[in-house]
Image (cartoon, rainbow, N blue to C red; front, side):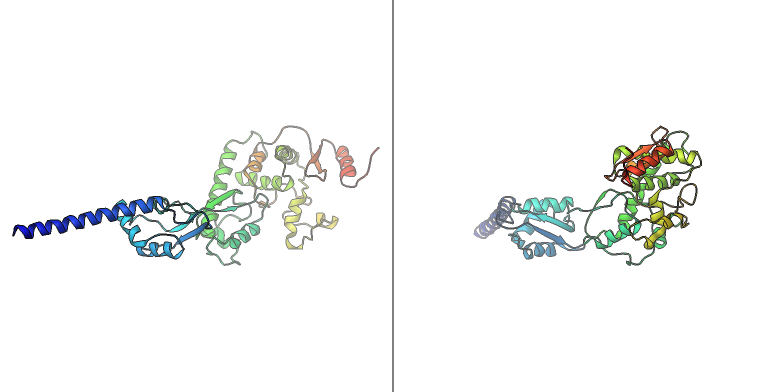
Length: 340
């Protein structure tokens, strides 16, 4: 009987020793040995949502990572990580250990893709960029109309043009167009509300929407940061004095697909709701996506007495107080005439 008990004790000790050896081996190998050698190229490990531990381990091995699934399973159990691995895309670099990869998968440190929404884009440009991005999951048909999209965003009363803030958005693979649009819409509304709250007194704008419309015109008129408030000042004084804005970008927007790349005299006199040569006041909607700087400029215009500006041809503008000065600038920079 004593011999039997001793035998059982020896067996149990052996089992325990074996388990301890396996645990030590798992820790030593997993925490020190790279899953990719320095000679190998980085890879992206893509774990679909809903994948279990066995599937994740198989995906690692199938991606060419130097791991032993059974050994790694022991490690995961010992660390209590086997039920905490998150799905997504993970970047694996040469020299990374399995332990480092597991830590990223537990924390959900997935690859972040990016989309930059550019100042001055129209809504069609934005939708084209969303549809073309390889990491964005299509949720909207390419021909989905802007009204349908704004309804899906719970803003059916708004025109889609100009309603999304230009900046760079980070997201994970599989994010939908609507999800990014929701973020850009919320960012625009927050920026516009903050700017309106801090608007200069006495500006001839009645609502934040009017500020957004003016900001979109400023955005299309100049890309120079130092000119935005000056151009806002010109338009502000024109509105205050009952003058027409007479800004070419609004005419171009109103022409739509009929715009050929060059404004003609007849275009300036062809009336549309956006033609600020034929109509007083602001157009009915924004004409482009306005960045934060243009929004702030619209509600905090530069003081002064200039009423005109003309392009120098290098991206900058000449500002004039009188119509005579403006005509002289037009002759010099547009017509190429030398007054001297």
